[in-house]
Image (cartoon, rainbow, N blue to C red; front, side):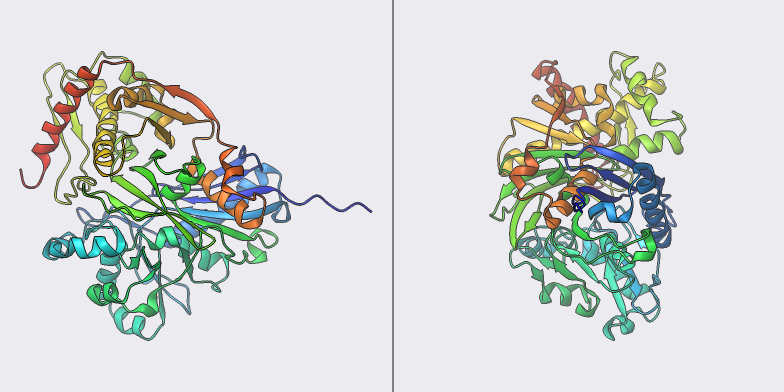
Length: 497
């Protein structure tokens, strides 16, 4: 009797800021099927952003079941599951009941801005350990806020009754039936509690933020044994073999495995990551030093620039001011006019990220005239993403190197107009891969690596294929003039203006 061929299909959970998704890939990285659920955000106060953790969990389960059904696969057909997630978003739950003590505090949330402002003198000390800055963006101040403001939380944490996690930890806990409290090195590196040189939780940082060590998960490699899903969830156990934060997963999905390779992901925010190799690189231009991935106990580092609002600006156009009915309308509107006639939109809805790090900055539109219309504002929103990318590219050049090309991914880059304008503003070639869902793909590839479907990163790199290359079609002087207008607009929204 012949033996059944080993399973090579891979499953990815991609839990993002505005949606939860599951995608089934074949061994070659082609998408077989997917399912998604939109995730609402709540804004209980100005600058506060929260998620319903239970909604994240139930939506994730529903998406996995639906994706498996659409792919015609059962749990036994999946070689391994990988998880990728919105980073920094912070949860604390009761280990016994599995219930969260408060809604998830989202990475965009700015409620701890005053604490960060009071303690800004510790920036250098924190950066030397973690590669990060003291900013509301990261998990540490969110944990401290929860312990301070939820009745009984600090005492319960000290007794070991509570667990902290980023979204990957929350999903792992639930997928394993409460057996596993773990995270990976990339998510740990975004908490501001993890020494990324020594690759361990740091006692001095825990003392500074007044956070009990009993809260923290175990830290594992990105391709590692994370146990299996409980059988009743998906009709049988599925091995969990890969975990990485969304931007690091995209680094893997874009096969940026050599120092100097760079990718930029355009989702809710925009995140540019430059592989810097095995050496920790300290930024002189207010970028973040972070873990790109950790495999077999060996850490590869990166520089990262974070833009808080990219696709979220399009969502704002659709949902808040209702200038468009769907995101897909933006490309035709941008093409319908020659230029914005000097209109700039600075989407600092939750402050400005790198390289400004100004949590008090707020969004604004400049240059409106009687002739300005919907198309001008929509195009200005798209252009803002490209200008912010140039902000990051210039900072990267000051710290490490000037890239010769940029690999892009995420939902926004299906817009050919935007991708071409990006090449024009940056004055370098922009490459879009055949699979733009590289965040989910990276999680699947890490799971495949952990399960032995792939033997090496080189084997994974050979799977990457370009869909389109966009080369600069605008003179450099023209790009510089447009960018100067952006810098002037940013200067006017800064909190120190």
